[in-house]
Length: 425
Image (cartoon, rainbow, N blue to C red):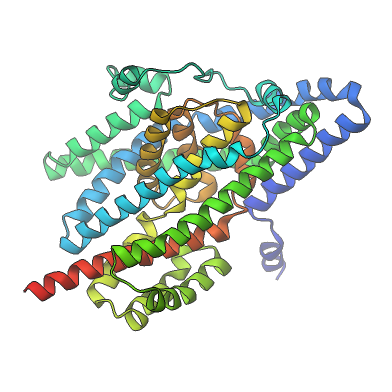
């Protein structure tokens, strides 16, 4: 009985991190308001602990991302080889995810630009969470940026944490694996899966002390910047929510134009699955409701529903690349960095690849592995990601709502194409 009570009362990892955020913010704001003379010395004393925790998270990113991309490419290749419906589903997923990521890259900087930038926030972030790699603030020419996509030395790219060229090499490596002997391929894929699993264990160890790391980071920032950091995190969450709602609504014209649906039929079919999504914040928990809507309300073929919807729950997480791009755009806004079109475009495409490669990872575990490569591809500092991890779970209900809507939209596309094939036959 005591164990059951303890299990029910134990705080979730997200709650623990939020408590660390609240306590650290309260401590930093209290120091800034009532003991300003002690604020900076205390911030200087605690910030090394926050940076140490942030470094521990960052050390897992290169091997984890490389392993996830290699395994993800081979998993997608196996799925595509299983039949025409699976191939069509993967194409639909890729186009929907890419469209969402490009939408975020185009809109997020403009939304953040609506809010005034505070130089005090930049100074506080530089002092408290500055990473070892300096941000890329100088404009890079198109030719130079394009030449940097493919690494001349993959080992050097990994050593320098140059994530875009490293992921490009991982894609080549993964696709190359699909062309070798099946037995040898299975050995290599198992090796990289073991690396990914090991890194996930290490990340979970580091996340166990996340409340302390977040406490130290936010206390140091708030002691220097006051309320500016909290208001900035509020702006970040607000922009995320607006983008999630926008892409959810944009799925309706996609279903109408590409999936051949009508609003009168499609919207009522969405509602039961969306209710489950908003209440459970889990696409997997929404799968039974999506299957019922697809079969009974929309009349899609059972073979399409049974294959496409389970794949969509894992692969077509529309809001994931949107979140990666938005977080990088937020950091650029917080530091006053003007990001060019080429890095934004590259970050959007990289976000899609990272999203497909991080299948099955819990949100807190995958946060640094997914957000850090996109931030680096955009040329912004990665230090603030440690603070953003603490509030990232707040818009989860809207994120799941968008994911479920995209899953049913992709199913409508595949169902329409399958119906055309049946009519031709």
